[in-house]
Length: 202
Image (cartoon, rainbow, N blue to C red; front, side, top):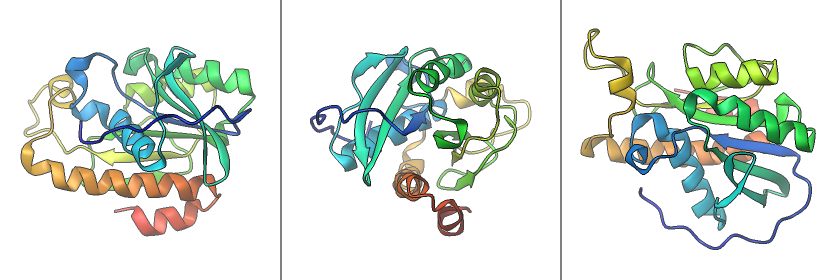
């Protein structure tokens, strides 16, 4: 959407972390609120100089090093409601525990531009997170929630809202939040989740 991608470096061995952004794979969903996780992964890839393009574990992936940590960066292609299937497959293959799976996704309870970082938690009504909790049999994975704004009014259909595109005036705060989310990922990889929460939770 907003970023150009660079070339992916060679694979770097067995990953110790998964960094997964959630979204829907069809092109028509690219700029929608529900694809905030994908947008964040694209930004992280651009900043770190890699591409998320190899198809494995029913996901687009990159096996890269971020801040000295080997990471499997994922964009599940199973559609949002089945995100847990792809993440489970990768986690089981590399024996990565939930505590080392960082999930980035949209949150309608937060205004655009806001972030919320958590060590663990319930699904909060988010179907992608519900799927991950079910397939990992755990809710103890850190997550970064990107605000996408509340429904315009209570009667507005939720699916229509999360599948709507960001407005032009929302682009600047969205980009700021995504920048902060990318910085937060680096802190989480270093085990500095308290620092990330203190810096970026809003």
